[in-house]
Amino acid sequence: MPSFSFEESLAQAYLEILQADSLQDAFGDACKLSGLFLSSLPSDFGQASHRVMIVGMEPKKWRDGTCPFRRLEAPTLKAVREAMNVHREFLAERPGPHRFLQFFNQTKRQLETGLKGKEVALVWANLFCVSEAAGTPTRSAHFHRIQSVSAKLLKAQIDLVDPDAIIFTTGWRYDRYLRDCFPARQDSKALEPKRLWRFRHGQTLCLRTSHPRYAAHNAWRAKALELVLDHLRAGTMPPQGQVR
Image (cartoon, rainbow, N blue to C red):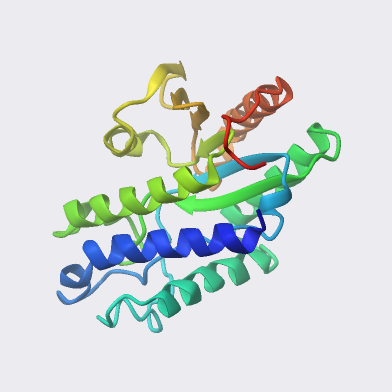
């Protein structure tokens, strides 16, 4: 199944969510929210031996002046595809001082090295699809709507990607929102309180660690990556019917 078909399926899923449960009320209320963050898929997604997601917190400033959703335009497939293309182009740029992108690129290299050159599709997502005033949206008057729409968008992506593992770089202060997003999680265990939390979402190994901007926690992000590599090397097969 070509990556294009996966991408189109994801775009359609995004559109259905945004048509049914938009953020127009939040965007229209003396808006301090960023533009809407919609993740794309890497070009090698359909051919990859392994799929891993890295989930950040929120997008900070993101298309603040150009996002059609923020301008209260009705959701369209064209607007969704455009948003996904912005995400793809952003990932293709040099990371510069951007700590998250540095970590993302480093993780892809280490996964491919650790798996002896096997192709790894690494996907970047965020727990929340917008920020407020370039910071957390949790203090927004519209947070419950933001949380609900964000969870639906993220779960749609997880359902399609069917990742072997997810690394959440959201820090312990967002743990309650992760619990809200994944109420059916299993095998939950704090490997190191506030620093490294493990659980499973279906067959997917999930690890929550700190955001890459916290250099003091480099060792815990390294540990999370080590656990992901161990999981992938174990060679667990994808469920029947899932194209790999």
